[in-house]
Image (cartoon, rainbow, N blue to C red):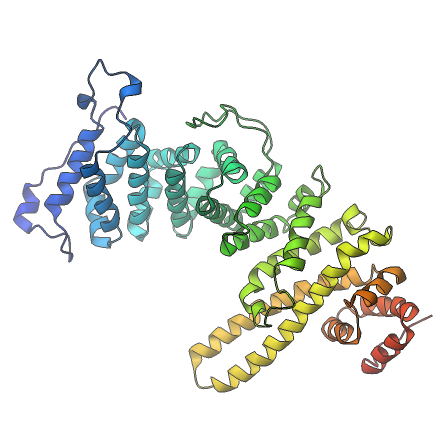
Length: 476
């Protein structure tokens, strides 16, 4: 900016009363804070002899307290409109351009984030190209709180249908956003920041497949010139999948909702061939991705000591994980992580997964019975019925994905694998019946193939299952 924005006159406001809209907040007080904010970044306040190292990097306590009050107040629409009317976004632009104080930058971005929650203001902020570019540059900041508020602001704007495309196009035209986002995902230990950045990426990929494809294919090294003291001037050759995995591992133990977000990002990648290839053609052949997802399903989610209702709580993350595993299995059945026929030791990696898939189906059957009982109790309640329908919809998605992966895995089993599965308890009459009940009739061929192998391993069990499911006919 060539100059700081001039403070508007407050004479008219004194005539109309001091309250901001229908609030008890004072226009005069807010106006005075905006004026002081201009003074903080005013060139006149900096002596010519002051070196860059001596420029104020900390807010004095009184100013910080006052501007934080404005931050809190900006959640009120009347206050947000007042700030918009008196050109607060332009003042904040001056802060971003001239301030060396991370805390001040964080607060100003945070205030903009609150203001953007209101549609008209969000449209005004979003259509300001200069402000939009400056905000995207904040993603290269070294200050985690500023990065968090910037991500929150971007997510707010991307969630507004009227302006989402403006931001998607702006981000698509700024290659540095990819590098900065990947740098955060691959190196930050701030779980709250990682979750919010993940939500931004998830929203971007959901909104625009072209942008997702560009990020999948991206990998050229660029100098983006981030104002980051502890990061390299030239960022490394980032690939999107390893960055997502690193962030997922970081949030895994501390934030289940954040893990859900990153699993959904991986699922979105598998909706395009390029995304699947980016996963399975990684230098490790996709082993890191498979191992992480396998571990989550087999050792953390929907465990034997969990109540069946847990599947309701975990249905979205399970659907994402199983969708990725299914895409990987179908794409790379000859990769080492799916070579069940080639090595006996591979059983220990895959039979537990088959056992977990069947347990998920068992838990869903139990939830289905509960859902029927609840629907009878709430027959007269429209809201209750709508909630149940939504639950049933998400469970159906999970069931479909689970059955597809299970059918593909069952038809790959050998006699040796099956014997081990029987020995370890993953396969028995109860689990096989549950699997058949869910797989038939859609996956008849897979069930029939598995039953032929099972007959070689346990004739009695195969005969019992055939009696329970007479539609099955095993051909010699």
